[in-house]
Image 1: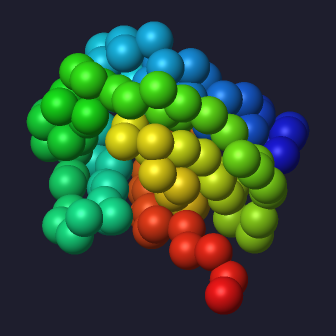
Image 2: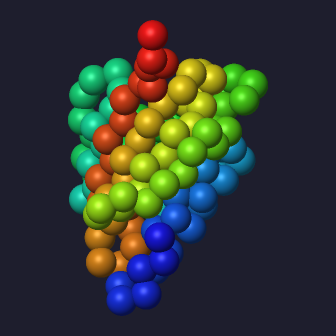
Length: 117
């Protein structure tokens, strides 16, 4: 999703997010978020602001499993980007990203991806 009117590429930000996760670069990852960003995490709970976001991501980046952070699907959607990928534990996850006007991540919400019966 190239967002020329706002001056940023939302899909590019999500790719940078994945690259930071794969490289286990917590400082780079946290810098992609707005100062007041929120995460609604898959395991329950919310994290707000960069300090809490770093606290959420640090243990996940410390010991990712094989295939962690591989892309399954990356799609634009109204208001942001939807990413299906392999979480830090190798399980399928869907995350919806919303951005502020400068291209920083404002909000993420994730949920496990369940296969149809």
